Amino acid sequence: MPNQLLTDSISSTAKFLDTAFEIAVEQEILLADYDKSVFKIVKTCVDHTITQKYINGNKLICEGYFRISIFYQPPQEDKLTVITKKQPFRHQLDLPVPVRSPYFLPVNGNLQYVNTRAVSPTRISVSGVYSFNAKVYGVQQTAVVSAVSSATACADSNSQTYFTLCSAGQRQFSMEDEISLPDNVDKILNITLGAHNCTVNSHQDKVNIKGEAVVDFFYTVENSPRINHIPKTFLYNQVVDMPGMAENNVAYADFSITSFTVTANSDTGKTNCLITATLDAKSFRKENLILVNDCFSKSYEYEKSHKDIMMDFNISAVSKIQNFQVEDTIGSGFVPVYTIIDTSAPYTVESDGRQVMKAKTTVSVIVKNENKEYECFTKTGDITLDTGSSLSADDDIFVTCQRYGADVTVSGEVMKARFSVNVKGFVIRHKNHKVLADFTENHSAPVSNPADALILYYGDKGENVFDIAMKYRTDLSLVMTENNLDTKILTEDKMLLIPAYRQ
Image (cartoon, rainbow, N blue to C red; front, side, top):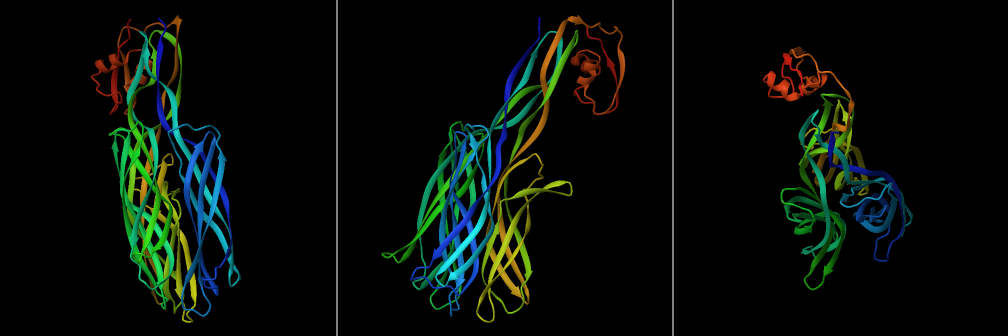
């Protein structure tokens, strides 16, 4: 009877696209009558917000806006002020193949350069380039042999545990609250937003996501150059629909703020803050499958082939807060006024034979000199991030790092900036596994059985007993029983008795 190969499929996370693109930052800003004119441009900050990212057929669409903030000093004033503008963008990419759900789509961006000049006291020109990296991950199905049906073949198989991306979902929601600012507020200089303490609980066909959104307001008051700071925490508790989700799945969620508005409430005398945010959740299911690693015929000549498959053998969480310090020499007579810290998307590099995660960090400190003019000192370098475990070049890493909490001191000519980074996300760990791809017996070409006597074989530590049985065309179970072995891998150098296989 001809043998049969029983097949199944195994899922793994596959990267369908990894590409980079650039978008120009171009703005001509005309100051309004109520804006103060420009004496000196001190610092320009450009950051991005992704409002939508989705796949339509074989098209990837990414939409959002740049927030351009220009810090400048008005003429004859001992004060820092700011003008902020938004520049919308939309970018479309062609995918090599259509991607079907479920998928997830990380998009990261960093400012490459920006040039700002005051064309006149009431007109500012901004030009620069912003670089993005977009990746598309989905589920890849691979056919594998899970059993061999044959009276004359011996198969080596084992059970493998792996993970598969089973569902993904999004939800947009809004948070609104009031914040008490003083009556004599002159200007809100900057608003920074972040997310902390995000937890995800799995349920049937849905996930419950809780966390905190932290908004920091930086402002000046009338007749004072001092920059003040008020933090505000928004709590959220949202449910995201996730078809195919089960309670024992591994689930993760990304929190991103897509827009915010700040308006004064004349009735209460307070400032109203409205935040629109997006939760992007994904879940992985744990699976078990019998895989045939190898096979041989005990009675006939045979042909076989193998293949390597990629498996997601582990999903691990990353959640760690790290503290850093940056030093620079700036000269004497400077007073720190305001600190801006930008941290890029994490990336991995090889260092001393191992994979290390880093992020490029730019620390910009606006200072005031003895002439009461404002200047900006900038220090750029790499920080090393701790993921809590070792990384491999084969790992797929989905980690964000968010800066919060900055403290700057100047002692003599040395400036020290201390800040914290929240490293959060997950890592998919892959491994290659060799399995049987095809096996054919030639029933017209029988092989002669070995002699009836037992054969002596000197096995080396670490040798696979199945390979030894295959060499002598005998049954694995016969070799295991004859030598009282309880594992297929030899734990020491050992003399084995190889019995002949008899039909």
